[in-house]
Amino acid sequence: MEALKDAIQKVRLLAPKQHVLLISHMRANTSLVGHLIGSHEDISGYYEMHIGYYSWKSLINQKFLFHEQNRTEPVTDFYFDKVLHNEHFTSRDVLCRDNVKLLVALREPKATIKSIVKLYSEKNPEHPCASPKGAAQYYLDRVRYITDLILSLGNDQNYYYYDADDIIQHPKRVLGEMKEFLGIDRAFEATYRKFEKTGHRFAGDSSENIHAGVIVKKSPDSSVLDLDNELLMSCQDAYHLCREKLIQHSWKA
Image (cartoon, rainbow, N blue to C red):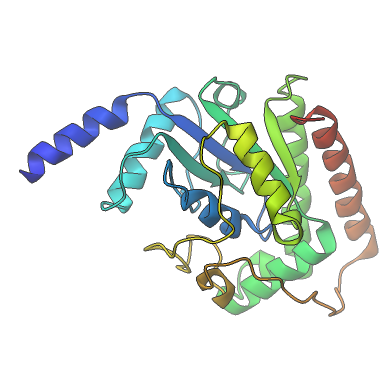
């Protein structure tokens, strides 16, 4: 009986689905967004799969990998993933496919770098991102990559951009615009499920906040960022340039 169920599921997964890809960087509230999106009954996926998207075959691979890791989750019409690292190649051809819906988010550099350093200092202190310089270099490289990727798409307005902190400060607006952009019937809720991998290492945010099931407003980090001013300015310049280009060509621009 199980073999028959598996065979039926494989056939269903081979059928084309809609894919929602979030292009962003670490510590941009993407775990929260993934849980809000993944809690929608028509969407599967809520964490970073840590895969690249090279061609249409990668989209099929995403579906099979998700169900291999989440055997109790149903086959749905939409599949979500997020890409936060440059080593996970993302093809322009994939992003321009009719069945791919692209979301893009940025968070300003100072708060992001502080958050990255705090995360890695606690979880992996030997990692380069445990230092302000290493975290800033990751941020700079990632934002520049996103800029080049978005510019390669042309002026088709085939993505939805939002400021990362707006999912916390203005969730009703952001979730409403996401619903409209994705073309789904049912609205997103401002609450979310706790999934099997919620809070697990390598599956996104592992802080207590992600277990809340609701959007939690965090107090700003008032600590001093010990970072070379020139590198910080480069991060800020890259952020402002990328954000300007994203807003200019975004859906609803």
